[in-house]
Image (cartoon, rainbow, N blue to C red; front, side):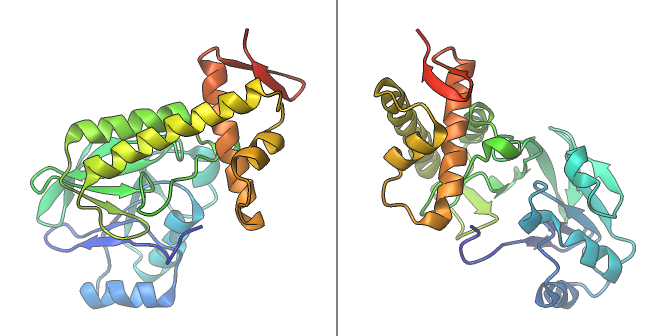
Length: 250
């Protein structure tokens, strides 16, 4: 699910900052030590999914003075034995020899944050977008499609010149990819509505119809995406569910 792996970003300088914690791989720790032997100083976690947060334990053990910050998601955060400094939308954080603004971008996860470097118009965008595929909205694990679409539109309005995602290559045409994401989600919503109108009433039935031919290993995430769309349609009064059977709202 992480493609070729994770990116974390280290900003050296007067206020060293590491964006995302990785998973504790020894090679990652050595790379940080090579950049700054006394450690990252301050670690900003984009969200509490394991591929972004689980490395805090190894970082704290290696560099005991490290500070860890994120937007609270208590039921997840308490699983890591570090002290968290809470972050909120609009916070300004000294980073390297400059500063970053915290941008709350929920949807993929309720605590998801991006970090905005206004001088270069660069956004450290976490799991907001990736090239070559779409981002999963895990509806049973805190994902919310309405929030996600709002986050995409908010970032589009910022007018970034570059996105630095947690997976995949840097994105030098943010407006193009974000617009494509918005269009894709609208097309998927139409497919879900069409499936409901055709009498398909379960998440599995809708996912099997829409994602025909998808690798079996990816079907659980396809079902999460379908459920996220159904929840959005329900919130908008366009779908309803009774005893786990979904129908078009009349």
